[in-house]
Length: 293
Image (tube, rainbow, N blue to C red; front, side, top):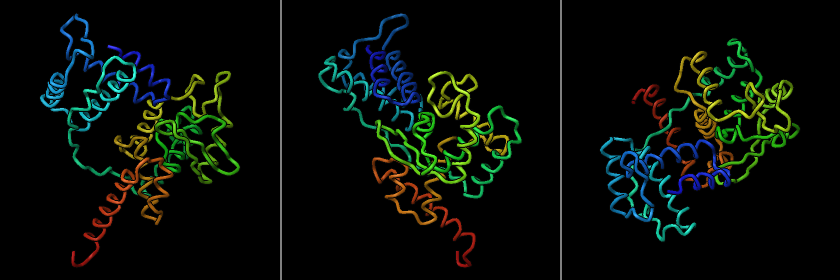
């Protein structure tokens, strides 16, 4: 069906490993839907819009969330875009499918006090982890820079400017941007670099116990471990600190355009969701404190 070649193309385009894994799983499920047990999947040109709508209807019958269905549809559209470029199909049939509407939900955001309390506890090193300096630097950059986990694990030694406190970050679509970091993150990075033990020619900043580049899955495990044991909250994940970074900046008076630039959002509308979070917080304060609430 060409799924393997498509995933290889995504790797050449430097798409994040997380996205490649998710797209691969979604597309293999898609091919499996049209393949009787033990049979080869059909060729993409044999599947018309009606067949694709049948597949989408099956996702509805499985009661998948709208978010999951939107991701699967995005994977299919991207795959068909690749097939059109390769001349395998003439039309991106997946574009004819209507995108399921996702419910508008606001991200749960830790308060500044909760976030800083967690980072202070990580800095104390009470858990006795094998790489406390590395772990603290991870937390300081996630919150201090608001970068994505894929951007964090993609950092190389040459991407760090300790003297001027800048990071060179490679975001979605291979776009590069510069992100500043503060004194606490700088101190954590210096300690991390002093203890860094790498395999020969390894330029990755954050490494695992084997001296190889840490994966996004590895960072998620680290964050969950500390958040669970220190804050008693297993729901905290790397993206929680990106939400906190943006919301706390906005609450303290930063303008949306600056936050958009720091986060690497292509559209301002993506950044604007944080204004809704701040308004929700303001309403909660009003309801608690105002005598006429």
